[in-house]
Amino acid sequence: MKKRFPDWLKHKLPPPETMLIMKNLMQDLNLHTICESARCPNIGECFSRKTATFLILGDVCTRRCSFCAVKKGTPLPVDKKEPESLFEAVKKLDLHYVVITSVTRDDLIDGGSSQFARVIRILREQRDSIIVEVLIPDFCGSAGALRSVVKSGPQVINHNVETVPRLYQEVRPLAYYKRSLELLSDVKRMDSTIITKSGLMLGLGETREEVINVLSDLRKAGCDLVTIGQYLRPSPKHHPVVAFITPQEFSEYEQIGIGMGFAGVASAPLVRSSFKAEELYTRVKSY
Image (cartoon, rainbow, N blue to C red; front, side, top):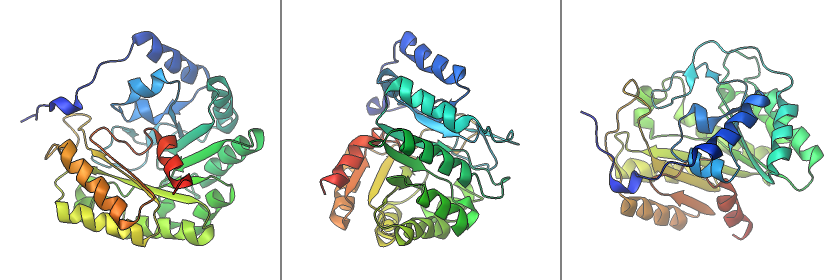
């Protein structure tokens, strides 16, 4: 039975003309956004502010996570022009804080890390003051792939644990909780100046104790920032929503996270890992 959305998850649709401007820009430059591919509920607000989270390495993922709306299958070859096209979009939108993520590309030897590095370098070389945040896959645990991203100089590296370890087999069958924690720790070992970030979704069937344990594990891994939001089912084929978490419960998790020592915690029903990322970043700079 489909669960009805509570009032706190309902919001107005954006003006169609605003959406069209952003969609046309991405199409003209042959770029993708996670906003569209993942059917993000905040797409209207972000597109209205002329911002988006860029999705590199195509729009087809090699993994089959049950929560994610991104297309699954066999990806196309890597677009060598993508880094330059992305910079062109950044110029047109006059972005000073850029968030970049990707599909998971287990078909590539380096997991797509070299494409991340090229994008980051171009952005940093062309705009000295730009802040680059990347939301990366686990690169199948490759230290070399991770090191290439770290060396390219992003200010923030995000890698989401997504859910509690007990639910990985159902939600992220090709991912490993321990490997995700190790990735965050490795970033700090490679370059302690980089801000690390992670996120998880609630409403998949986790318990309060499990969520608190994940937050504790992330702090032990040296994670600086964390985002917590409500899981929303993209389609009937995806993992069901087990529960809608109240705004009060999200506020409680935020306070728990702050008490653990996170520099910043964004915890609310419509929070997503890249939503208003610059605001969360500024909390670290004043921490």
